[in-house]
Each structure stands twice: as structure tokens, then as C-alpha cells.
Length: 346
Image 1 (cartoon, rainbow, N blue to C red):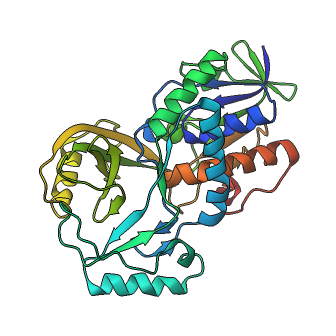
Image 2 (cartoon, rainbow, N blue to C red):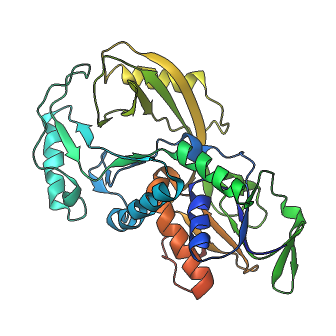
């Protein structure tokens, strides 16, 4: 069977690229073996401000301008709601925190997303805070629902194979790629930290960072916003909240750990003082890059192999933009952002 593209991996990156292909009426097959779980367990939050330093997320305005319409189109296409917009409230623990918030209004790329009016309300169940700052244009993509639904959509259209991709079966013939029964023009690898096993791109400096979250049932915690303190506390509905996340550079497994749970429990003690029950725990490996920029581009020798990876913690914001840029680069020789182009590591 002849196709335009093979996509390896269907997390947020692979999904976004598949959508680009569908819009352009390109043929493709996705290979997915469920080995990478970062997109499935991700909090899915989109937040244009790095609240630890009150600095702008890289290209946040431009990314949101692409991402929000992208998810809106997917909601209509899949007939599901998975984009929940909400206010993000940053907890101030001191007058210094509050002063740093107002200093951020001098930053042109940050100020549009911050509310100048402080929230001085008391919220039952939240430990004493020195007021709150509201971040605008935030929200959450239910990545688990989105990806599972999208996989079903591709399955219904015979566009996905649930099996491990075998690199050794790739054969290059006459500017085409032969793989099993497929003949393709291009392969795009969007396999998360699995790229470490990819002989064509394993040289790229991808760092695996384990992240864990817990889901709690807390009926006395009545908040409809994302609370950002030493951990985030995000409402899921039904009096349930997701709490996270950890950052572990040593443990390379995607299994939930007692250490991760205890770390979150200890931090949560400093944020809320209402009883709760842990009802779930999840873990995944984030594909992160040391310079905090994604990995996008074409193989130096094999020009019909491409990579779309390293989205880190902000995949929901950046995936649609990167997929669009990579597709335009492959099909129309468009420019890639030098900050994301893998040529920076050659």
C-alpha cells in the first residue's frame, strides 16, 4: 500500500501532525504501541506565564493563537468537549510575592495575561495565602480523552496500527521508504522518549524527566479554578482534583511510585487543610531537551525521515504550531524556527 506519510507515535505531537495531513488530504498510517504515556497522563494545562519567575512562556501568544482554534476544530470534529477554560490563581505567600507580581507588568509579553486586580477573597480549605493573582487565558485540555478518542477515530478509518515500529525493517529505495507492506514518501517520528532507541535520531540530547500526579476526592474543597502553589490543584469535576506534579530525573520508569505519592502528599499539606482521599495516581516520562526547546527537523542524511519531539511540559500549547511548521517545511521547504530545528545539534 502506498501512503504519503508514516507517523510513529500518537501523543500530542503525532496527533497534531496527523491533523495537518488530514487537512491537506495526505494519506498516512500511524504506528502506536502505547509505550510512551506522557501525553496520556499529562495535566494538559495551558498557561502563558511561568509563575515561578513571572516570566513569559516561550512564544505563548503565537502558540495560543494556533492551539486554541485547533482544539476547537477537534471538538467539533470528534463531537466531544475536552477544552475547559478557567482562571489560574497564583498563591502569594508574602508581600514579596505580591510585589514580584506587579513588577511583571513591566514585561510586555507577560502583562497581557495578568489581572492587575488582586483576589483578596478567602477560600475555604485553602491554607492562608497573602492574596492571589489571576492569570488569564488559561485552561486545560483533557489529553487522555482527546488521544483515546482520536485513536478510535483513526482506527475507524483504518489509519492506525497498534504495534511496535521496527526500525530495522526500514528500506530506502528510489527516494521512497519501504516498510512492511507500505511504501511511503516520509516517516515522521513523534515517539516521545522512545526516540532514545531510534537509530536515526538517538543522538539528539533528549532528557527523560519522570512526572507523577495524584487524583484526589475532596468534597469540602469548593474551587472552580486552578490553584498554583508548591503544587497545582486542578478541578476535574465531581469534587475531584488533580494534584501535581513531580520532576524526577533519576527514575526512568513510567510506573507510579510511593516516593512520588509521598512527595505530592507532603507538598499538598502546605496548600489545603481539608480531608481528601487519593483515588488515582499516574506517572509518565516527559521528553525534555536541555535547552528547553523542542526537537523538529529532517535527518541529515535520510531526507525523508523527520522528527517531532521534545515538547516537554507544554505540549498542549506548542504541538499544533510545531506540527504546522514541520509540515510546511517538508512540503513547501518553509523555514523552521532555528530555536527548534535539530540542526542546532549537528
